[in-house]
Length: 466
Image (cartoon, rainbow, N blue to C red):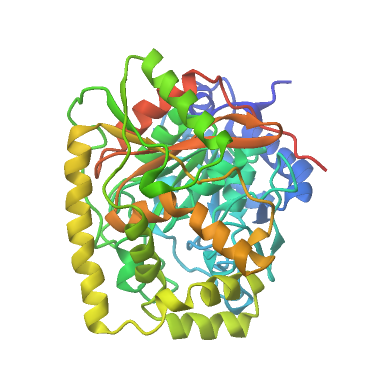
Protein backbone atom coordinates (compact mmCIF):
# COMPACT_ATOMS: atom_id res chain seq x y z
CA UNK A 1 0.00 0.00 0.00
CA UNK A 2 1.22 3.48 -0.87
CA UNK A 3 2.53 5.42 2.14
CA UNK A 4 0.57 8.61 1.60
CA UNK A 5 2.25 10.39 4.53
CA UNK A 6 5.43 10.49 2.45
CA UNK A 7 3.77 12.51 -0.32
CA UNK A 8 3.91 16.27 -0.71
CA UNK A 9 0.90 18.46 -0.05
CA UNK A 10 0.81 19.39 -3.71
CA UNK A 11 0.67 15.76 -4.81
CA UNK A 12 -1.83 14.77 -2.12
CA UNK A 13 -4.23 17.55 -3.06
CA UNK A 14 -4.02 16.59 -6.73
CA UNK A 15 -4.62 12.89 -6.09
CA UNK A 16 -7.53 13.56 -3.72
CA UNK A 17 -9.19 16.02 -6.09
CA UNK A 18 -8.84 13.45 -8.91
CA UNK A 19 -10.25 10.83 -6.51
CA UNK A 20 -7.23 8.60 -7.00
CA UNK A 21 -6.88 8.74 -3.22
CA UNK A 22 -9.59 9.37 -0.67
CA UNK A 23 -9.16 12.03 1.96
CA UNK A 24 -10.16 9.40 4.52
CA UNK A 25 -7.36 7.07 3.43
CA UNK A 26 -4.87 9.94 3.72
CA UNK A 27 -6.23 10.94 7.13
CA UNK A 28 -6.05 7.36 8.42
CA UNK A 29 -2.44 7.05 7.33
CA UNK A 30 -1.58 10.45 8.77
CA UNK A 31 -3.05 9.42 12.12
CA UNK A 32 -1.20 6.12 12.01
CA UNK A 33 2.08 7.91 11.31
CA UNK A 34 1.38 10.35 14.15
CA UNK A 35 0.67 7.54 16.58
CA UNK A 36 3.81 5.67 15.50
CA UNK A 37 6.40 8.44 15.69
CA UNK A 38 4.94 11.15 17.92
CA UNK A 39 5.70 9.25 21.15
CA UNK A 40 9.39 9.58 20.22
CA UNK A 41 9.36 13.33 19.61
CA UNK A 42 6.24 14.83 21.27
CA UNK A 43 5.67 17.23 18.37
CA UNK A 44 1.85 17.08 18.50
CA UNK A 45 0.32 17.59 21.93
CA UNK A 46 -3.41 17.43 21.15
CA UNK A 47 -5.39 15.65 18.45
CA UNK A 48 -8.80 14.05 18.06
CA UNK A 49 -8.87 11.15 15.62
CA UNK A 50 -12.66 11.14 15.24
CA UNK A 51 -12.68 14.81 14.27
CA UNK A 52 -9.79 14.28 11.84
CA UNK A 53 -11.67 11.46 10.13
CA UNK A 54 -14.88 13.51 10.05
CA UNK A 55 -13.07 16.36 8.28
CA UNK A 56 -11.72 13.89 5.72
CA UNK A 57 -15.11 12.28 5.20
CA UNK A 58 -16.61 15.70 4.52
CA UNK A 59 -14.00 16.32 1.82
CA UNK A 60 -14.76 12.96 0.17
CA UNK A 61 -18.51 13.60 0.34
CA UNK A 62 -18.12 17.04 -1.26
CA UNK A 63 -16.01 15.56 -4.06
CA UNK A 64 -18.62 12.86 -4.64
CA UNK A 65 -21.21 15.63 -5.12
CA UNK A 66 -18.94 17.33 -7.65
CA UNK A 67 -18.21 20.28 -5.39
CA UNK A 68 -15.01 22.32 -5.21
CA UNK A 69 -13.09 21.46 -2.04
CA UNK A 70 -10.19 23.93 -2.11
CA UNK A 71 -6.53 23.99 -3.00
CA UNK A 72 -5.52 21.90 0.06
CA UNK A 73 -8.14 19.22 -0.56
CA UNK A 74 -7.65 16.68 2.21
CA UNK A 75 -4.05 17.64 3.02
CA UNK A 76 -3.16 16.95 6.69
CA UNK A 77 -1.92 20.13 8.41
CA UNK A 78 -0.85 20.79 12.00
CA UNK A 79 -1.60 24.05 13.82
CA UNK A 80 0.48 25.63 16.56
CA UNK A 81 -0.83 25.81 20.14
CA UNK A 82 -0.64 29.62 20.21
CA UNK A 83 -3.46 30.20 17.70
CA UNK A 84 -7.17 29.71 18.30
CA UNK A 85 -8.70 26.54 16.90
CA UNK A 86 -12.31 26.10 17.91
CA UNK A 87 -12.77 23.55 20.66
CA UNK A 88 -9.07 23.35 21.59
CA UNK A 89 -7.17 25.21 24.30
CA UNK A 90 -4.94 28.03 23.09
CA UNK A 91 -2.31 27.16 25.66
CA UNK A 92 0.78 28.77 24.15
CA UNK A 93 2.61 26.17 26.20
CA UNK A 94 1.56 27.48 29.62
CA UNK A 95 -0.52 25.97 32.39
CA UNK A 96 -2.08 29.40 32.95
CA UNK A 97 -4.00 28.96 29.66
CA UNK A 98 -4.79 25.26 29.81
CA UNK A 99 -8.52 26.07 30.13
CA UNK A 100 -8.59 28.83 27.50
CA UNK A 101 -10.84 26.96 25.05
CA UNK A 102 -11.27 28.75 21.72
CA UNK A 103 -14.87 29.32 20.65
CA UNK A 104 -13.85 30.58 17.20
CA UNK A 105 -10.92 30.08 14.86
CA UNK A 106 -7.99 32.36 14.22
CA UNK A 107 -8.26 33.63 10.60
CA UNK A 108 -5.28 31.51 9.54
CA UNK A 109 -7.07 28.40 10.84
CA UNK A 110 -10.28 29.42 9.06
CA UNK A 111 -8.32 29.93 5.85
CA UNK A 112 -6.77 26.47 6.10
CA UNK A 113 -10.19 24.92 6.63
CA UNK A 114 -11.70 26.88 3.72
CA UNK A 115 -8.87 25.61 1.53
CA UNK A 116 -9.85 22.03 2.37
CA UNK A 117 -7.05 21.18 4.79
CA UNK A 118 -7.65 18.43 7.34
CA UNK A 119 -6.44 19.76 10.69
CA UNK A 120 -4.47 16.87 12.11
CA UNK A 121 -3.30 18.11 15.50
CA UNK A 122 -1.85 20.88 17.62
CA UNK A 123 1.94 21.33 17.60
CA UNK A 124 4.04 22.10 20.66
CA UNK A 125 5.83 25.35 21.51
CA UNK A 126 7.93 26.65 24.41
CA UNK A 127 6.12 28.46 27.20
CA UNK A 128 4.85 31.82 25.89
CA UNK A 129 6.65 31.00 22.58
CA UNK A 130 9.77 32.73 23.94
CA UNK A 131 12.62 30.37 22.98
CA UNK A 132 14.56 28.60 20.21
CA UNK A 133 14.04 25.36 22.16
CA UNK A 134 10.71 23.62 22.68
CA UNK A 135 9.69 22.49 26.13
CA UNK A 136 7.14 23.61 28.69
CA UNK A 137 5.60 22.48 31.97
CA UNK A 138 2.20 21.70 30.42
CA UNK A 139 2.97 19.63 27.33
CA UNK A 140 6.56 18.55 27.94
CA UNK A 141 9.62 18.45 25.74
CA UNK A 142 9.79 18.17 21.93
CA UNK A 143 12.78 16.36 20.38
CA UNK A 144 14.43 16.86 17.03
CA UNK A 145 13.62 13.79 14.87
CA UNK A 146 17.12 13.89 13.34
CA UNK A 147 19.02 13.85 16.63
CA UNK A 148 17.65 14.11 20.17
CA UNK A 149 20.84 15.87 21.28
CA UNK A 150 20.03 19.02 19.28
CA UNK A 151 17.15 21.46 19.54
CA UNK A 152 14.15 21.11 17.23
CA UNK A 153 14.11 24.89 17.28
CA UNK A 154 11.45 27.18 18.62
CA UNK A 155 9.07 28.53 19.05
CA UNK A 156 7.45 26.48 16.23
CA UNK A 157 9.54 23.48 17.24
CA UNK A 158 6.61 21.08 17.32
CA UNK A 159 5.55 22.24 13.85
CA UNK A 160 8.99 21.66 12.34
CA UNK A 161 9.55 18.33 14.08
CA UNK A 162 6.12 17.11 12.96
CA UNK A 163 6.54 17.93 9.29
CA UNK A 164 10.12 16.60 9.27
CA UNK A 165 8.88 13.28 10.68
CA UNK A 166 5.97 12.98 8.25
CA UNK A 167 3.25 14.05 10.66
CA UNK A 168 1.31 16.15 8.18
CA UNK A 169 2.50 17.59 4.88
CA UNK A 170 2.27 21.21 6.04
CA UNK A 171 2.67 22.80 9.46
CA UNK A 172 1.43 26.17 10.62
CA UNK A 173 3.93 28.26 12.59
CA UNK A 174 4.39 31.79 13.88
CA UNK A 175 7.46 34.04 13.75
CA UNK A 176 8.34 37.17 15.73
CA UNK A 177 12.10 36.60 16.03
CA UNK A 178 12.83 33.48 13.99
CA UNK A 179 10.17 31.11 15.28
CA UNK A 180 9.40 29.66 11.84
CA UNK A 181 12.83 29.97 10.25
CA UNK A 182 14.92 28.53 13.07
CA UNK A 183 12.84 25.36 13.64
CA UNK A 184 12.81 24.77 9.87
CA UNK A 185 16.60 25.15 9.88
CA UNK A 186 17.04 22.89 12.91
CA UNK A 187 14.77 20.15 11.56
CA UNK A 188 15.95 20.24 7.95
CA UNK A 189 12.74 21.48 6.32
CA UNK A 190 11.61 24.67 4.58
CA UNK A 191 10.02 27.54 6.51
CA UNK A 192 8.57 30.84 5.28
CA UNK A 193 8.13 33.98 7.36
CA UNK A 194 5.69 36.09 5.28
CA UNK A 195 5.62 39.87 5.17
CA UNK A 196 3.75 41.52 8.02
CA UNK A 197 0.11 41.81 6.92
CA UNK A 198 0.29 39.01 4.36
CA UNK A 199 -1.47 36.31 6.42
CA UNK A 200 -4.42 37.52 8.55
CA UNK A 201 -4.22 36.63 12.22
CA UNK A 202 -6.23 37.31 15.36
CA UNK A 203 -7.02 35.25 18.47
CA UNK A 204 -10.64 35.92 19.53
CA UNK A 205 -9.96 34.20 22.87
CA UNK A 206 -7.39 36.80 23.94
CA UNK A 207 -7.03 40.58 24.12
CA UNK A 208 -5.34 42.27 21.17
CA UNK A 209 -1.56 42.09 21.34
CA UNK A 210 0.66 45.07 22.09
CA UNK A 211 1.83 47.15 19.15
CA UNK A 212 5.28 45.55 18.89
CA UNK A 213 3.78 42.11 18.31
CA UNK A 214 1.10 43.51 16.01
CA UNK A 215 3.65 44.94 13.58
CA UNK A 216 6.27 42.17 13.68
CA UNK A 217 4.62 38.79 14.43
CA UNK A 218 3.31 36.67 11.57
CA UNK A 219 1.82 33.26 10.81
CA UNK A 220 3.33 31.19 8.04
CA UNK A 221 3.96 27.66 6.73
CA UNK A 222 6.60 24.97 7.17
CA UNK A 223 6.83 22.06 4.74
CA UNK A 224 9.23 19.62 3.12
CA UNK A 225 9.22 21.44 -0.23
CA UNK A 226 9.15 24.99 -1.54
CA UNK A 227 6.20 24.09 -3.79
CA UNK A 228 4.21 23.14 -0.68
CA UNK A 229 5.15 26.44 0.99
CA UNK A 230 3.85 28.30 -2.05
CA UNK A 231 0.58 26.35 -1.93
CA UNK A 232 0.21 26.82 1.83
CA UNK A 233 0.91 30.56 1.63
CA UNK A 234 -1.81 30.99 -0.99
CA UNK A 235 -4.26 29.18 1.28
CA UNK A 236 -3.25 31.07 4.43
CA UNK A 237 -3.18 34.53 2.85
CA UNK A 238 -6.87 34.86 1.99
CA UNK A 239 -8.45 38.08 3.33
CA UNK A 240 -10.15 38.33 6.70
CA UNK A 241 -11.65 41.59 7.98
CA UNK A 242 -10.75 40.79 11.59
CA UNK A 243 -7.07 41.64 11.03
CA UNK A 244 -6.57 45.41 10.64
CA UNK A 245 -3.02 44.86 9.37
CA UNK A 246 -3.99 42.57 6.51
CA UNK A 247 -2.80 43.79 3.09
CA UNK A 248 -4.40 42.34 -0.08
CA UNK A 249 -1.12 42.39 -2.00
CA UNK A 250 -0.72 40.05 -5.00
CA UNK A 251 1.22 36.87 -4.34
CA UNK A 252 3.24 37.38 -7.54
CA UNK A 253 5.04 40.68 -8.11
CA UNK A 254 6.75 42.18 -11.16
CA UNK A 255 9.50 40.16 -12.80
CA UNK A 256 12.91 40.98 -11.34
CA UNK A 257 16.40 40.31 -12.62
CA UNK A 258 17.78 37.15 -10.99
CA UNK A 259 20.29 39.06 -8.90
CA UNK A 260 21.22 37.95 -5.39
CA UNK A 261 23.53 39.38 -2.76
CA UNK A 262 25.52 36.98 -0.58
CA UNK A 263 26.60 38.25 2.84
CA UNK A 264 28.49 35.67 4.86
CA UNK A 265 29.11 37.74 7.99
CA UNK A 266 26.49 40.49 8.32
CA UNK A 267 27.63 43.14 10.80
CA UNK A 268 30.73 41.05 11.50
CA UNK A 269 28.80 37.98 12.69
CA UNK A 270 31.28 35.20 13.57
CA UNK A 271 29.98 32.17 11.65
CA UNK A 272 31.30 28.62 11.87
CA UNK A 273 32.92 26.92 8.85
CA UNK A 274 29.84 24.72 8.39
CA UNK A 275 27.65 27.80 7.99
CA UNK A 276 30.00 29.38 5.47
CA UNK A 277 30.04 26.14 3.52
CA UNK A 278 26.23 25.98 3.44
CA UNK A 279 26.04 29.57 2.18
CA UNK A 280 28.59 28.95 -0.56
CA UNK A 281 26.79 25.77 -1.62
CA UNK A 282 23.52 27.70 -1.82
CA UNK A 283 25.17 30.50 -3.81
CA UNK A 284 26.61 27.98 -6.28
CA UNK A 285 23.20 26.37 -6.74
CA UNK A 286 21.75 29.80 -7.52
CA UNK A 287 24.49 30.46 -10.07
CA UNK A 288 23.85 27.09 -11.72
CA UNK A 289 20.15 28.03 -11.95
CA UNK A 290 20.96 31.25 -13.81
CA UNK A 291 21.17 33.72 -10.93
CA UNK A 292 23.84 36.38 -10.60
CA UNK A 293 25.32 36.24 -7.12
CA UNK A 294 27.39 39.13 -5.79
CA UNK A 295 29.28 38.63 -2.55
CA UNK A 296 29.05 41.74 -0.37
CA UNK A 297 30.71 42.67 2.90
CA UNK A 298 27.82 44.54 4.48
CA UNK A 299 24.06 44.96 4.43
CA UNK A 300 21.97 47.72 5.97
CA UNK A 301 22.05 47.45 9.79
CA UNK A 302 21.13 44.05 11.14
CA UNK A 303 22.66 43.92 14.63
CA UNK A 304 20.96 47.20 15.51
CA UNK A 305 17.67 45.94 14.09
CA UNK A 306 17.97 42.75 16.17
CA UNK A 307 18.51 44.73 19.37
CA UNK A 308 15.60 47.03 18.60
CA UNK A 309 13.37 44.07 17.71
CA UNK A 310 14.12 42.49 21.08
CA UNK A 311 13.12 45.73 22.77
CA UNK A 312 9.98 46.11 20.65
CA UNK A 313 8.99 42.50 21.36
CA UNK A 314 9.69 42.45 25.10
CA UNK A 315 9.66 46.02 26.45
CA UNK A 316 5.97 46.83 26.01
CA UNK A 317 4.48 45.08 29.02
CA UNK A 318 7.76 43.58 30.23
CA UNK A 319 6.79 43.66 33.92
CA UNK A 320 3.50 41.88 33.17
CA UNK A 321 5.33 39.30 31.04
CA UNK A 322 7.81 38.66 33.83
CA UNK A 323 5.05 38.35 36.42
CA UNK A 324 3.22 35.81 34.25
CA UNK A 325 6.43 33.84 33.69
CA UNK A 326 7.10 33.82 37.42
CA UNK A 327 3.58 32.52 38.09
CA UNK A 328 4.11 29.83 35.45
CA UNK A 329 7.57 28.99 36.81
CA UNK A 330 8.88 27.90 33.42
CA UNK A 331 12.71 28.05 33.45
CA UNK A 332 13.03 28.77 29.73
CA UNK A 333 10.61 31.69 29.75
CA UNK A 334 12.32 33.12 32.84
CA UNK A 335 15.74 32.74 31.23
CA UNK A 336 14.56 34.69 28.18
CA UNK A 337 13.10 37.53 30.22
CA UNK A 338 15.89 37.71 32.79
CA UNK A 339 18.54 37.47 30.09
CA UNK A 340 17.06 40.42 28.19
CA UNK A 341 16.14 42.53 31.22
CA UNK A 342 18.67 45.27 30.43
CA UNK A 343 17.25 45.70 26.93
CA UNK A 344 13.57 45.40 27.79
CA UNK A 345 13.06 47.06 31.15
CA UNK A 346 12.52 50.73 31.78
CA UNK A 347 11.73 52.01 28.27
CA UNK A 348 9.44 55.03 28.57
CA UNK A 349 7.11 56.54 25.97
CA UNK A 350 9.89 58.67 24.49
CA UNK A 351 12.15 55.63 24.22
CA UNK A 352 9.43 53.57 22.60
CA UNK A 353 8.72 56.37 20.12
CA UNK A 354 12.42 56.48 19.27
CA UNK A 355 12.38 52.75 18.47
CA UNK A 356 9.42 53.15 16.12
CA UNK A 357 11.02 56.16 14.44
CA UNK A 358 14.22 54.22 13.88
CA UNK A 359 12.15 51.36 12.47
CA UNK A 360 10.97 53.61 9.66
CA UNK A 361 14.55 54.63 8.86
CA UNK A 362 15.90 51.07 8.81
CA UNK A 363 12.94 49.79 6.81
CA UNK A 364 13.60 52.46 4.18
CA UNK A 365 17.27 51.50 4.00
CA UNK A 366 16.38 47.85 3.57
CA UNK A 367 13.76 48.55 0.93
CA UNK A 368 16.29 50.56 -1.07
CA UNK A 369 18.87 47.79 -0.70
CA UNK A 370 16.33 45.21 -1.89
CA UNK A 371 15.54 47.37 -4.89
CA UNK A 372 19.07 46.56 -6.07
CA UNK A 373 18.93 42.84 -5.28
CA UNK A 374 15.98 40.50 -5.74
CA UNK A 375 17.09 38.51 -2.69
CA UNK A 376 19.73 38.54 0.00
CA UNK A 377 21.38 35.24 0.96
CA UNK A 378 22.68 35.17 4.55
CA UNK A 379 22.88 32.87 7.59
CA UNK A 380 19.87 31.76 9.58
CA UNK A 381 22.19 31.38 12.56
CA UNK A 382 25.92 31.70 13.13
CA UNK A 383 26.05 28.07 14.28
CA UNK A 384 24.64 24.67 13.48
CA UNK A 385 21.51 23.84 15.53
CA UNK A 386 22.38 24.15 19.20
CA UNK A 387 22.69 21.38 21.76
CA UNK A 388 19.21 21.03 23.21
CA UNK A 389 18.42 23.34 26.15
CA UNK A 390 21.75 25.17 25.71
CA UNK A 391 20.23 28.49 26.80
CA UNK A 392 19.57 27.08 30.29
CA UNK A 393 23.14 25.91 30.88
CA UNK A 394 24.61 29.20 32.11
CA UNK A 395 24.66 32.91 31.25
CA UNK A 396 27.50 32.66 28.68
CA UNK A 397 25.54 29.93 26.89
CA UNK A 398 22.41 32.10 26.90
CA UNK A 399 24.34 34.99 25.35
CA UNK A 400 25.92 32.65 22.80
CA UNK A 401 22.46 31.58 21.64
CA UNK A 402 21.12 35.11 21.29
CA UNK A 403 24.20 36.41 19.54
CA UNK A 404 24.17 33.57 17.01
CA UNK A 405 20.52 34.22 16.17
CA UNK A 406 21.01 37.88 15.22
CA UNK A 407 20.23 37.49 11.46
CA UNK A 408 16.82 35.98 12.12
CA UNK A 409 15.85 38.29 15.01
CA UNK A 410 16.57 41.38 12.94
CA UNK A 411 14.37 40.73 9.90
CA UNK A 412 10.95 41.06 11.63
CA UNK A 413 11.85 44.58 12.80
CA UNK A 414 11.50 45.76 9.20
CA UNK A 415 8.48 43.53 8.51
CA UNK A 416 10.30 41.73 5.69
CA UNK A 417 9.63 38.23 4.36
CA UNK A 418 12.32 35.60 4.82
CA UNK A 419 12.75 31.94 3.97
CA UNK A 420 14.81 29.23 5.67
CA UNK A 421 16.01 26.75 3.04
CA UNK A 422 17.54 23.40 3.95
CA UNK A 423 20.82 22.66 2.16
CA UNK A 424 21.78 19.30 3.66
CA UNK A 425 23.29 17.86 6.82
CA UNK A 426 26.57 17.87 8.68
CA UNK A 427 26.58 14.30 9.92
CA UNK A 428 23.08 13.93 11.38
CA UNK A 429 22.67 17.67 11.99
CA UNK A 430 20.60 19.69 9.48
CA UNK A 431 21.95 22.93 8.05
CA UNK A 432 20.49 25.61 5.79
CA UNK A 433 20.47 29.25 4.77
CA UNK A 434 18.19 32.28 4.86
CA UNK A 435 16.78 34.32 1.96
CA UNK A 436 15.30 37.80 2.41
CA UNK A 437 13.35 39.88 -0.12
CA UNK A 438 11.43 43.15 -0.20
CA UNK A 439 8.03 43.46 1.42
CA UNK A 440 5.30 41.34 -0.20
CA UNK A 441 7.89 39.62 -2.40
CA UNK A 442 7.67 36.16 -0.89
CA UNK A 443 7.58 35.02 -4.50
CA UNK A 444 11.22 36.07 -4.92
CA UNK A 445 12.27 34.18 -1.78
CA UNK A 446 10.41 31.11 -3.03
CA UNK A 447 11.89 31.33 -6.54
CA UNK A 448 15.44 31.53 -5.19
CA UNK A 449 14.61 28.88 -2.60
CA UNK A 450 13.44 26.50 -5.33
CA UNK A 451 16.74 26.93 -7.15
CA UNK A 452 18.66 26.07 -3.97
CA UNK A 453 16.32 23.18 -3.19
CA UNK A 454 16.65 21.74 -6.71
CA UNK A 455 20.40 21.43 -6.30
CA UNK A 456 20.06 19.27 -3.22
CA UNK A 457 17.20 16.93 -3.96
CA UNK A 458 13.85 16.33 -2.29
CA UNK A 459 13.43 16.22 1.48
CA UNK A 460 11.95 12.92 2.66
CA UNK A 461 10.29 12.36 6.05
CA UNK A 462 12.71 11.04 8.63
CA UNK A 463 12.16 8.28 11.13
CA UNK A 464 12.88 9.78 14.56
CA UNK A 465 15.91 8.56 16.42
CA UNK A 466 14.92 6.78 19.63
